[in-house]
Length: 256
Length: 275
Image (cartoon, rainbow over all chains, first blue to last red; front, side, top):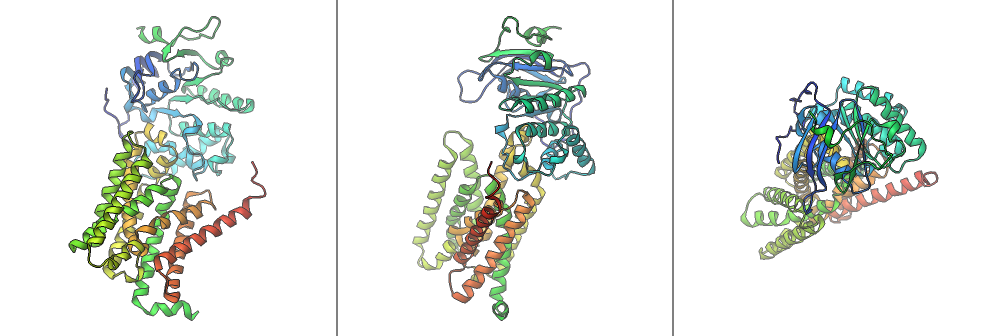
């Protein structure tokens, strides 16, 4: 299925539809070319504005694929997705995808301030250079995430937790409302984990909606409002005693 | 200081110097992207594939650089297209196209009566550059630098984070095609200075040397340009006084810069950066 896509730098950003959830996915299948079966099989998900939802499952269960489909990196083969009431491809500015750290070339010669500035590009488009308002936004989000003293550092010289906060800062600079985080807590130590969850908590207070792929079952109840359990690309029932919270899966998505 | 000014009484020396500076700066700045995006192999390949265009233009009595532009842009688009298909690995596709085109160029050269006349295409002849050539080289250099300046933020973003670029609707593939076309134009501008065999060194070596010394992109570009311009001038003087091949002398000077840069890096960083 091909949607019309909003090209880079277009000024015609679609407004959020009042009352629409941050994300509504119905019966979405998606995968990579050359594979016989789609990785995701008929996934449905409803995430209200301001909620924090965990995607829980083992490696290969489709968490990353779901995030990539919602961010528009992968086309949905089947089903429908709407973000704040609009099709995926017209909401670039509203959705920030925070990849696993390996997807970025951290050795590239760019400092933290400029890295965060790339969050403004979706609003600038071709030829326009960042101006004073953009620099103010960048300075303020860097301050908010506590990485102001690192602003001049090359991005490869940051610790894992600092890199994660730089990614969050970029998402804020983008003024994204829906943040898709792919395993932000993987391969980081306990102190870093604390830093990241503090940062996430503060973003939540600002009304940001978050969908987070995670392995960490212990912190689900304290850090999330709801959870979708995945296995082999399908939604599964949570194990007995596992965190449930707000219903977000199939039933929630098709109700009403 | 008489030895510095003495060669400047000849106009061919002035033309050569101007060409060396223009080509050096263009190669050096673009080369930073080539190095950071790990495109060294494709850069080398593109340089070799302009040869059949040059030779065909020569045989047909057309403008040489015009022929090279056509061949270079065609190969850039061809390699980009081939490597999008996942049936062939990119380096394999480049290897096939690059050697095939180069062989075709040599084949065409061997049909010409005077093989020697054409050897300057392989190894460059910077002191033989005419003022018409210089005009074209200047136009190409300014065009490439202008495009790099205008699309700097997109080139930068797609280089280190193509995923974010795609999420915001910026097609990394389009940027890559553009870069390949710029690369072929730059190769064409530099062919007369150092020849098709060595031009990729001018793209890669100064930028690689600069990348050892700084972690700031603008500074890397400035340093790279400085190395290339220095090497260009040094190579020209060497060729004037010692009567060695100018193209090769320029590349040897670049390599010396690189050696100096790695030495500097070793003494600057080795004691403390044990992570």
